[in-house]
Length: 491
Image (cartoon, rainbow, N blue to C red):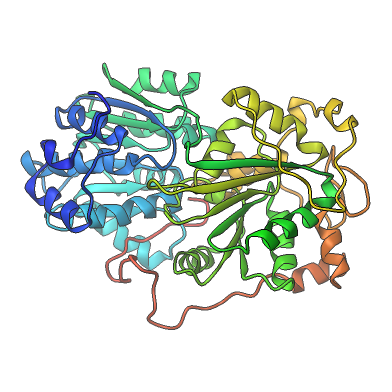
């Protein structure tokens, strides 16, 4: 189907779904929706490859809701299974589903980690009673299958969302074991932001003659204004202050390569008077929920985060994304900056490139076949030495912190992936390949503000938790008696 302007009313969606879209002021389809909805309505397998922020969630939820309404399905079985890599994305899909299914009688159960035993028991009872749609993370789903509380033998629809991310997080075997529990005659829908060989192999394994839809693979949205500051590692705080002097932070996400740097930088920014909070996988689920709700409600101007929010966080009005550290591959770069310029808006993406970020920048520009415009350094900040171009880090030494964050911060992190242990580096100790120049680490900046570099002081200066008043819950989140339970922290 061509990508000309298509309205939802032009598609064969149910009247109840169209009524919900009308109330939500959804009229025109995005290209991925226009091309995926018709074959899904025909019960075809669909392999969709599209960048973040293109409307993939609606592309499969809308036709599945229609199919569940039009065709008889057992009331006591799980009829549709949607698997997402992280609890944040699963929650995001759940919220979208509540809107799209408002006028239907389709019931859904969300299954993901971070809840207590009471919620787990409620979740177990909901699954055994049957559900039209189950939204789940792989780890939690495997737990239910192993305990015998989930039966997928009659499930007729399977959706794998952000499949490339799930495979990167080590869920390939889990996904295959889940698929084996399902009937061979089923509809399988797979969405991915990229199409690496392992995704193609997975598609051949779990899909039958899929319709392939490819939309702008691994390319940033055209309405993102990208720029790069080439600076010394120790001058990054000065460049960041220059950026905020030009445009005070409002609806900004600042990405760092490691949890430790997120913690330290958020403290520095708070002491400088910025309304900033940290977001990383060391936070409890209740703390993550609180931070995201405060950011959504514009009570936080600046979110300092790891790649835990690079995918699945659907906030349309992000004005700027800043990469304090360059991601080491183009895919992560596209996902990070894809948090801005969503839903047709304009956005800005700024990347700070220090000496050890040069290889990452070269890799991004080579893969995307672009040259990101260089921004002029502020007065008093010197460009890095020419040696930075020749000192390329070996591939095996790149992105250790970010890979560790992806494994520990993702849903369902298993003991197998944690084997070998994770030793916290003492504050002030340097990572392999990290520059030893004075002021190189963000911790040095914190020290200038009076923070001592000892472990006891570091623990005392963690950002304070803000407790939500009793009875208050994030917008769009279900009441406690309606939400499904969540499992232990490793799910």
